[in-house]
Amino acid sequence: MKRFARAVSFVGVILLLSLTIGYAQQSMKVISYNIFEGMRKDSTAGKVVFSNWIKSQNPSIVALQECNRFTQKKLEELARSYGHPYAVLLKEDGYPVALTSKFPIVAVEKVLDNMHHGFIVAKTNGYNIIVLHLSPHKFWKRREEIDVILQTVKARKYMDGPWMLMGDFNSLSPLDSNLYADGKLIQRYQEAAKKYSFHENLVNGRAIDYTVQQKMLDAGFIDAAHATSPQNYSSRIDYIYISKDLKSDLIKADFIKDDFTAARSDHRPVYLELKAH
Image (cartoon, rainbow, N blue to C red; front, side):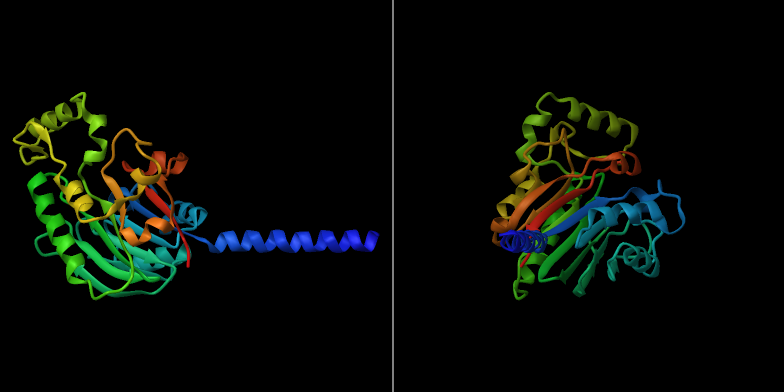
């Protein structure tokens, strides 16, 4: 009888381990993060604090914005320190975006023409990725930029696999319009425009522009955070969009709020979890 009980117990442990391993294999994490001027608030050599935080999150793919003062070599070294042997930097001046991954990054295109900061198009682990950072100051420029980005997706229809578009869109979503109904945000934009003459973030100086996000929605992309964590935020300009063929794979998307993200950037990172295949 004791031998039987031990055998049953052993089988139970094996089944539990199998389920645990199976669950771990069923999800993949993606993070998009505006790290604030090259993670300036992490002054450690090699950005050790930032690297350790990324390792604790264990993402398979990371999209970064504001990789200021990075070189391709420095990005590769940083990415490798948190377990990503593959990395691509848009440029080595200004406010570049970057993509790092546990998997090879291929079919890379870096687009700078007609863009304020620019964007990266690439493929990794079977996903087509765009990492972007739209104009921070002019609503009409953001409209032009999103048109270039969406036309880029259309022009790459020959590439099989689903799409993820992520980054700092510097624009607001019509899905969140109720959050801005009190007019306080419009007032802040108006005050900023008085202080900085180059700011044109309001249409005719009076209205919030929802065009960029509406174009994303009209193109059939799904706002991942709103789909799974609707308005778990007071406002936002950072998004991860997925193509419709990823809808059934979407487990969760939200902003990451912890002690690290509260202190290290003026943005909170967005993450999503997908069923892995």
